[in-house]
Image 1 (tube, helix red, strand yellow):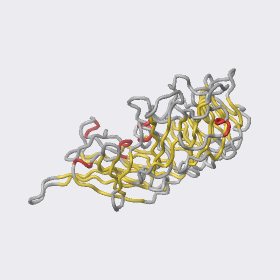
Image 2 (cartoon, rainbow, N blue to C red):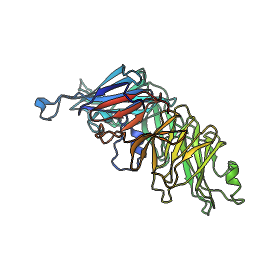
Image 3 (cartoon, helix red, strand yellow):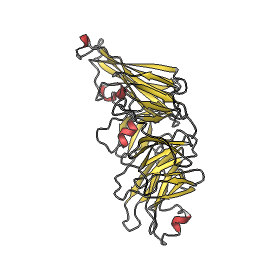
Image 4 (cartoon, helix red, strand yellow):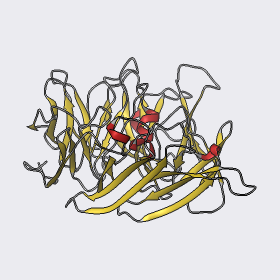
Length: 419
């Protein structure tokens, strides 16, 4: 990042960031209330504007929250969105804090969107009983309203949203989703075991088949979540050449699929009798066809380390870390740029705002900047002494390469800088 921030805003104890439900759902840390200050090319901050009587902390007349969408390059406000929640007559399982009513998500085409939830208590009138109404609205990073829908009744106060739809009803393996702004509901397959979203829109469902047990390991099946159609499995697609060369006839190696970008996925094939545990490949999520063979890597033998995959916005750089050492490579060609050696500090990717500079947590050095071409340390000890709060990562990156450093003193935004 540049030496001086392009712009900054002071923070106080009423400043925060939207909730990140995907990060929260896929986290292995129980009780993790993840938040993010980034929405595409915008920086988004929340404020708690609730006024409590006599500053005693008693029950207010209503809860008031605000989201501000700011241009990452200039800090100029693109949109201010207010939320009002009545203190009485409308109830929800959500905690009464901004990050529960203002969350990040995705629109129907997979682009980033901000979900805002408003509550309203409707008084009894004539023969009509008192009731409640909940409104779900999504905004683009530009501030444009993408779609909005309101639902009456207490059973609609805590709906979740995905791909520009709200989940109205859950079934045994699929749910009924209604598009925000109106339209016919659709039946969508559930994800498997809290997996991270893979692919744009509703994306793909990846399941492991244990129909047959042998030494070949796991078999993955990939389906279109919207149509329900099974697209491919690791049992019937062609193996990468280097994997096939060391796999006995009739056997299938273990494989694990991770999100990458768009309709491309990162498929790690297990290797036997090799210096490394797995071969990294880029595959077409619609067909399973291998597009690129990448480098080999080590995996965590205890499978206790969460996979980390950092991809640059231009798609020309990726750093993977599966517990056995970070590897930087080009997902368009498969060429390896560098890897963490045995005598080096552990490198865990944090952000890759461009194909030039990697921000990583380096053991013994804290948050550091590394040259993506040479692994040279450009800066270290970048962690703020006091982060904005325990639920916000110290450093986040926008889709246009800006770096956001969130601290208790303020939010500082740095322009991208080449190594």
